[in-house]
Length: 186
Image (cartoon, rainbow, N blue to C red; front, top):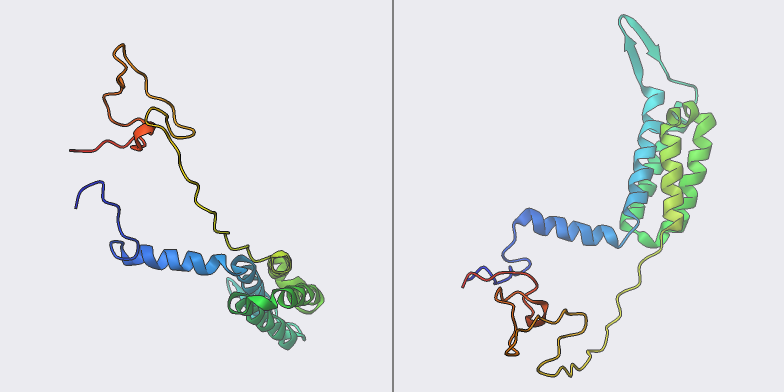
């Protein structure tokens, strides 16, 4: 195996690199970031009404009479975020529902989780509504290359020639020969 032999994807790679590549492909096929924002927006909305803030010996309880409503809104936002990840065809419904739940959380849940959960859920819902799946790449027909012996490929810089009409490039890395600037070790 020489230095010029490319690594075979999936066989010669580290496991973490393979997992990362698969996760990246999975993430690219769905509104991943919208789901993450909606989930992160639901967590403070559900948490803050049940939280107790300790300042020395002083306990500040942020619980309200609508604590159950806050919990329901937070859990629904988390469920909508997970459904955006695994059921990408419900993105419009989940996005609109996330926006409506974020708006309802303002009066119900301590200003929508102190505006943190409200803003995250609102942005995530808007991202879910606006997300569209990408078009698959179209197969392009192969062009027949009719390159003469002295002609360089399209876009390549011709190698300088000396007086006896031979290439003057001694490095062996001109674009005309396909080396693309890589040096071979022998």
